[in-house]
Length: 295
Figure 1: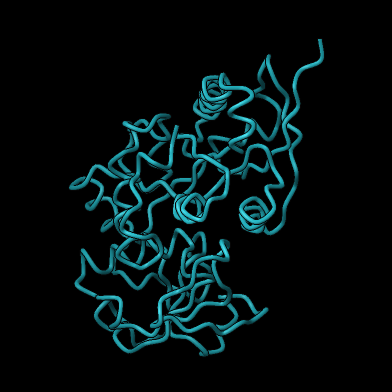
Figure 2 (figure 1 turned 120 degrees about the vertical axis):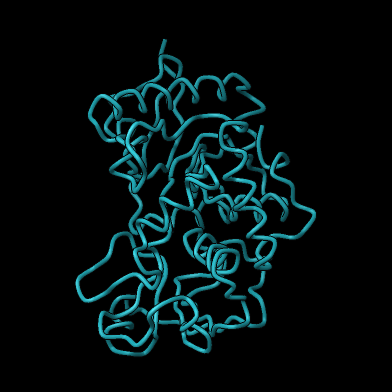
């Protein structure tokens, strides 16, 4: 009998890459994987058009979409996680030497609900005392979920130029949202990797950015899919572990830690902090609860 087929958009983080490579597969269904570039466009296509049966989804966007009545639901399977102390960058010759120097400066992100920015702003506020209105926040595009509006202290300046290009031109003072530290830039937070490791030691949190989500209709018709996707996720993670891709020392953390655990309870502390930051930053309404986002 031919397996069920589901249209999917899943990213390329190391623990889910074996799914994209078809090294980890299910006996009960097959994934028709859609290539989306840049990948964040898939989130907009999912919440606006329900284009996919199964999709990677930022937790904040998931919360916005579900609050707006979009018939999707989250699965507590972390599709993207990363440390974020290195995720706010300035030019190497900038006079910004630490978070305090961001007061009054122009800090650019692709969008206000972008998950990296949520984590960065939350860390800056709670660890360094830099409050939201201390900074001139600039964004290039609005939220994926059209029913939501960005806060009045955020300025939309639409541009096709990259974040890095605008930083190098001096049009902004710092940027959030890039992976890595490109040549000519440095983290705003001094000794950022060490600061991140110390923060993890205190909090125990490995920040979750994205999870998987599924259309509610698919879940209603195939309630077994949560268990099956969890098994698929675990297979993929096992392959990634065998490859050495999940060595925690490669992720800015001490060696020997188990990363990318499946399950709501295993990720509750991290995801709850992200939801709390999202509420503080006027991205999610205070009525949103973490448990309401997941099956």
